[in-house]
Length: 299
Image (cartoon, rainbow, N blue to C red; front, side):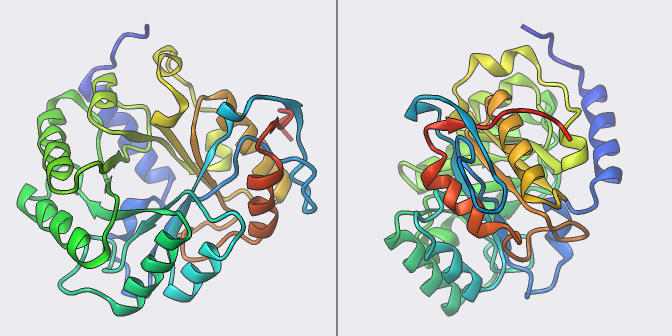
């Protein structure tokens, strides 16, 4: 087991990532209403014989298949495009109100989009920023109630998590409330880095990486990460321009024990405002690549 890094180390590392990753989910807090949350959806176990270059090899069992989490920070029409994919994405993150939470009233267009997604078998997470542990608990609890009442979500995605031990009680309180209000719900935490290991007992899924493809190639994975099942981890990678780079990122994520993945070619202040340009190939990999794993050769 790797020793737990001290809080001040984690805080320093997060400050570096904030400077180097301006497109992080946390930056959407101040985005206009037109920015709706994407949730990352990316390919599964690997890309097998995909027309846009997502190639794969090396058989693995179906239990190794990854799940697609679509960043759905886009408009309702794009939601319909995503959920019409075959197969439909496993998870989509809903952010109808400027990147903070559920907003003050339901959005009819998104209510329709969510119904369509749920009918297709997609799990829906409501987005709620924790503002690095500074947002009042009562506001996030209100998000939980509103997302349940207005959209029938299956869980919440808590963004802007520092992942340090001193803030653990705050997230324990939130997770307990969410599970109580939405029975059987899934609570996702997004520190964007590997947090204090204790967070693994709080989040049902923890997004342990969010950043660019260039950053992703060089991250260090703590040894304890392989003590958990892949379904505990999510990776979101943006700024991967080509389908071949997307394929490499997917392959790396498999080696890093990530059960949920999203890769996009988009970058900048909001890399989640549309589906990636290679989305059709990515979606094909969900079906054809499930029993295969991509070769890992970094370009």
